[in-house]
Amino acid sequence: MNRVHEKKHPAERRPSPAEHGARRELNPIQDCTEYVREYARQRPQSVALACLGVGFILGWKLKLW
Image (tube, rainbow, N blue to C red; front, side, top):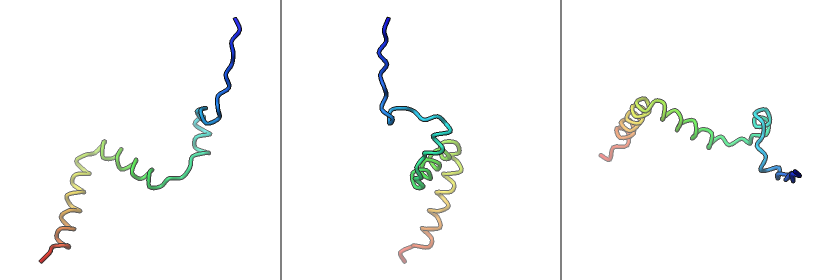
């Protein structure tokens, strides 16, 4: 049986873990939002309490009267 080996385009090849860390582009905003989302999934009570506190302080300082 003859198998034809198809060459994959370099973009289609998945990098090894060592290559992934070396070639990873820096996206601080995307990384930060991903981290916050993961943290919110793991600790929803803490995030809800923090949002309540921030909302209370902003509402107190930005009141219209």
